[in-house]
Length: 286
Image 1 (cartoon, rainbow, N blue to C red):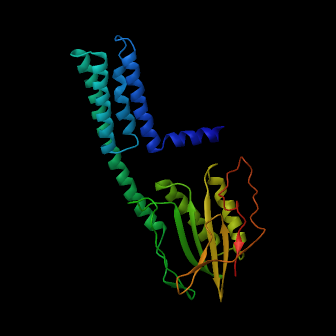
Image 2: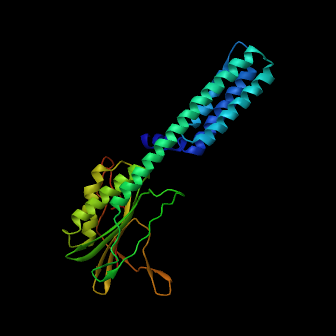
Image 3: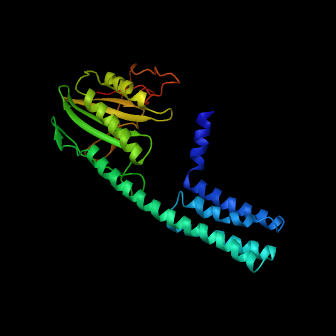
């Protein structure tokens, strides 16, 4: 039940849904103000829409909500035929709420911009540039966030040279912003710590899952591909990530052939969140 409630709250908090709720609330207040007795001052609540909008949107959309609230004030004034003092207090409350909402929206946007800048710097420090060549294997990488105009996301990658050969990780964590950067840092730290100790790549995935699971929330997840490069072969373990592909010199792609293994069976109980590195059986390809 708590999971369903959390999902409902998360859905209601999405900007389009949130904006629709704010506008619908003011529309309902307008209808009640027109239909109720003149002694009931319902129209004073029309300033709620701008205040709700500023919590999820910037100055432009908040200004639209202010105009919407003032327009509804005019509708109530014409419908109830209350000119003079009845009009001034109604518009005054809506204008005051709109002014406060604009100040909040501008302040919040500036703070978010600062946090994004910090996140980008932290992410650059975490996702260090890949070497052009390591262990006789050439590497290249390009990172681009799915969100237009933003760099910070939940993707991760790294490579390290071990006594078993070059080992590579690429993956995705739930979320975005500073929370995602923190999860990425945790996954990479565990990979860098265990990559030198475990000879078997599939068991490495199991150990990473065991290390990450206690710190994960019930709805958190991490999907990764682990790869190990040897003479003339590449061994791959896929833990819930998109299927890897092999690129030829002519730029045609073909899926990497793989057979499932029996490792990483799920041992997590409902009370013990897991990192989802064990949700899908790893695959090894040679």
